[in-house]
Length: 428
Image (cartoon, rainbow, N blue to C red; front, side):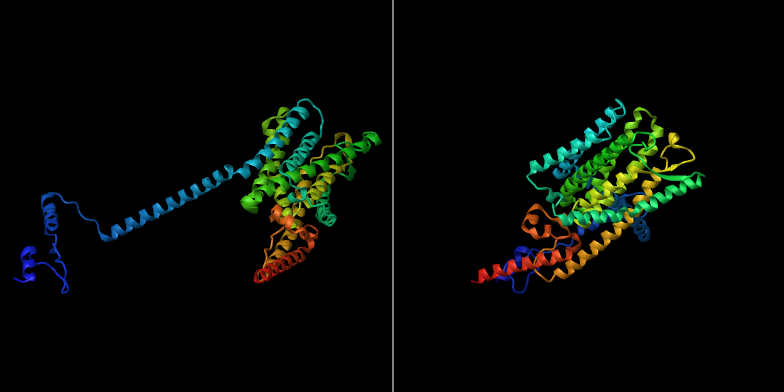
C-alpha cells in the first residue's frame, strides 16, 4: 500500500496540497451551528421582529453622534482640569505665588489695620518699602543680577524707556479734556489745580503743600519700581520660560488685579458691601487691563524700564492734577470724575502701546526670516533669554532696543564666526 493510501485510510478524505509533506486534517463545515440556529427559531414561540437596516443605521448614527459629542465635552473638561492642575502643581508657579502672597500679606495688613482701622495715613509706603527689600533679598538669594530680570544698567536702554513712556503720556490731553467736558455739561466752571494728597495750595501752607508733593513723588517712584520689578520683572520672567507669554501675562495680570483689590476691600470696615462692590469690579477690570498693557511693553522692549516710567507718570500726573469746578468751591470738592479720567487715559495709552508692540513684533519677524538661512539662534527678545544667554552675548545688553535688528545681525555674525572657527579646528 502506498503512502498516500495509508494516510487516506488513517485521516479520511483530507485536503492535502500537491507538494504535501504532512497530511492536513479534514475541514469541518460547521453543520452543528446551523442546526442550533434553526432549533432556536423553532423553540422560540414569540420571536422578536428584527429591525430594519435603515432603523439600525439611524440609531447607530444618533448614538455615535451623542457619544462623540459627550466624549468631546469630557475631553475638553479633562484637558482644562489637567492644565489647571499642572499650573498649580508646578514649582515655578508655586515660587511665583509665594512671592506674590508674601508681599500681598504686608499690603493687606497696612490697608486693613493701619490705614482704615487705626487711621494711620501711611499712603501705602510700608508695603512698597517692604516689597523693595523682598525684591533685593530675592536677587541676592538666587545670585543673579538685576539685568537678568529686565533692569539692564545701560543708559541708552533707560533713556529709551523714558522717551517711550513720555510718548505714551500724551494720553493725558484727551483724559483731561473729557474731565473738562463733563464739568461743562454739568454747568460748572472747570479750572486746573495742583493737589497734593487731596490738599490744594489754598487750603494749606506753601511749605506743607510742597512737602506733600515731594512725598507723593517719592512714594509713587517707590511704588512703580517695586510693583513693576516684582510683577513684570521677577514673576513674569519666572513664568514665561515655563508657560509662555500668553498664560504668564494672564497669571501676572490676575495677581496684579488682586493686589489692588485690597484697596476697595479695606473700605468694608467703614462702608457697606453694596457700596464697595462697584469699586471692586472697577479695580479688578481696570488693573487687569493695565497689567496686560505693561506685559506687552516688557515683551516689546525686553526690559522693565518702560513699565516703571509709564507707571510712575500715570499715577503721579493723575494724582497731582485735578479739574476743579470753581462754582462749587474747594471746600466741597470731590473728585468724582477721576475714574473717567483713568479710563480715557489708559485707553489712549494702550492704543499707542499696541501700535509700538506690533511694530516691534513685525521687526522681529523680518529679522527671523532674514536669519533662517544663517547659522545661529535668533532670540524673540531679551525677555526670552536665560541668564547664560545674556552672559554669553554681552553685546545684546549694550544695544538700544530700537536697533534690535542690528543686535540680531551682530549675534548671527558672531555665532557664524564661532561655528566657522570650530569647523576649521576640527578639519585641522
